[in-house]
Length: 295
Image (cartoon, rainbow, N blue to C red; front, side, top):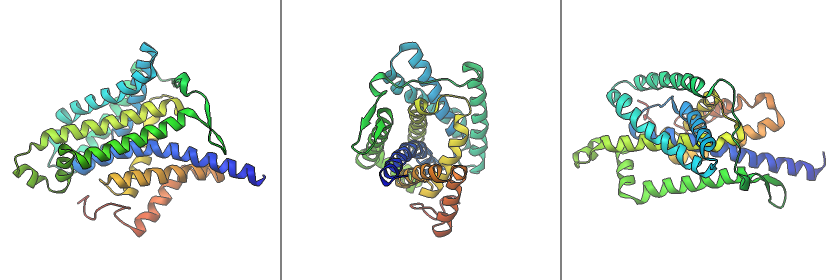
């Protein structure tokens, strides 16, 4: 292999890892946002990711409009999140952290079986819009336009979420609620509404990740099973409840998996766990996590 070919292959793999990392980032942001405020480990997040892909496919099939599907799927998942939080999660606040984990695990299985009943057991093809079907010349490689679009959308979402949490009154209440919920309640703020909103946003991010990933990975009922485990690894490495950690760890894990696939494909499925073990040995709370958050 010549040096030019090696550099081209490595560059393509790095960009592929960046795309995978953006999917991890969107999922990990939702998980971290929900855990940071509600201290709820949402094990149904992978199934919500899957459901976002299916709902996006259905909207695309009915309307032929990818952009409408991209908008509608996260909104529908956010609404579903509001219903789940209000009816299932809220009665479990103040109880053991295991209770909502087991409930969301059961919900995950229900959603997977529901998807099989509604859309069938066979995988579905989700085509990107014609405008994003080609490739872009980056100077050193040609890279699929759609994958660059996914990177850009994720960057916009991360910036918007950072501005929401850092520059708006509601965002400041969310951040304060993660630090000292008793003081926030003492100031007369109804945290129940804040929890409802945050859970909905987190589920909407899972739906957005699903509809963005669908043209690259296809749509099938089990698509969230593996990715939810990898997303939890990202959250743990970045630090439970840390949004900055979710972004950094998500991009890092995407690159690690992509480069491992290039040099040692059989190791790609376990490399994330190796990285997690190494990170936790050095920093038990992850990159940006706080000690004692799980207690």
